[in-house]
Each structure stands twice: as C-alpha cells, then as structure tokens.
Length: 312
Image (cartoon, rainbow, N blue to C red; front, side):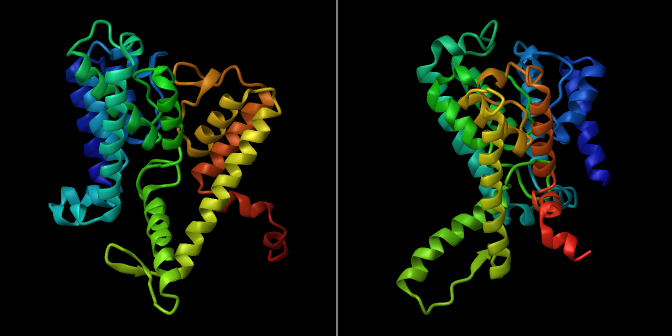
C-alpha cells in the first residue's frame, strides 16, 4: 500500500505549501483520500474560498480517491494503458466532466445572487468561480467525500435535485467512496440496452460485456438485486425519518446521504448545516443506514433474514 502513503504525503505537503497550516493540511489530506469529508473548520473547505489553489488541490485528490486503487497502483508502475482502457474509469471521468459542465453553466448564467455569496471577493472571476465550485461539489458528492465549498441548495431548484441525484452515483469500485458505485451503473445501463436487442432477437445470446469480457448472468442478477435493495432501503429510510416530523425534502436528503455515506443532505441538513438537530432516535437510524451503506447492504441485512439463522 506504499502508493497510498505517497498519495497522502503528496497531498499533505502541497496543501501545506498552498497556505494551510500543518494541522489543517494533515487532517484534510487524510479526510480527502479516505473520502471521509471531516474538516477542521465549521465552514468546511469554504473557509478557504479566498485561496482557490487549496480547493483545486483537494479537487485533484478527491478525483484520485474516487478511482479504483488498483488503477492507481498501475499508474505508479507506469502501466498507463490499463487505466485508460478501463471502462469504469472512462465512465467515471465522463460523469465528472459532463456533470461539472452542466452545473457550471447553470451557475454562471442563472445564479448571480447565489454566486456572489460564494467568494469574498471574486478571486479569479465569475467563470472560474462557477467552474471551480461546480467541479468541487460534483466530485465531493460523487466520491462521497462530503466536503463543502458552497451551499448548493442556493443554486436553483434544478441543481438541488441534480445534486440529490448524484448522491446515488458513488465512486469507482475498489475506491474509498461509498454509494452504488460507477461499475454497477455501467453494467445496469449495458444490460438495459441489451434488453431492447433481446426483445428484437429472442434467440440471440447477448451477454453483458465489461472490459471486453462477458459477465455471467449471476453477476448481473446480483447487481440488479443490489440496486433494488438499495432503492428499497432509501425509501424505507426516508419514511422512518419522516416519522420524526422531518419534512419531505430533509427526509429524502437524509436517507440518500446516510445510505450513500455522502455527508451533506438537503433542507435543514444541507451543506451548511449538520445532523446535530436530529432527534436521538433519528441519529441512531442515520447511523444504521450509514453502516449498511458502507458494508454494501447484503453483509448486514442478511443477518435479519430467517434462513440465515436456520443455517447456523
């Protein structure tokens, strides 16, 4: 795991040189590569909005933390072709680019008032600020790091729903990110398109392929089962939160954020708030959702099935 140590050390040294104190740098280095998201400041990374270079450094290492660490190992070994040939890496990168462009354009053209509250003063101009905060928040939510550079709930209703949707994405398999994971979405998308072909050609054998290799039907069914179970857990999670008199927006935000280990949610528990105001039992419920989400659902939920105990 030496490559992880050097990633961490590089992130720490660069951030320290960019203007963070040593204490802040080492804490944010550990929380970035672990996609943990805890900051030493109440304002999170927004505390350094007047130092864009710090946010760009964190952006780079959030992106690296969301990549399968096997690919990071290949990078250190100089096997770059294996990285760019990986389908999950390519889709992960495309997601980041496309979602950043969408968010940046909306922020630039439609949220002058909200954008004016982000940087004090506008350090490198409106366009740069819109791009930086879009990229930062997209990566923070996709990789489930949970750092905050701005309150995205101020960026039009569309972007609120947009970032809510990103909570279900997750980083790459084999990374420290939570969520569903990009590879599962990739296989689900491929299988969905193949269903059209199977409908037109019922006798054809059309396996789902990943990295030019056919995937067995058992793996596809496992991913479909995981996704269904994930969405059921989200729905039940939101229903339970609503039982504590938490409003609809906050309930679905809490359920999605807790299950995906994202951090910031929506409404009263959005990016500039925390979970301190949750009722005691609601905190236990959020903790349970975080646990099953982090352990990929099956590991924990199987304990609640009767046949598991019959087979002991």
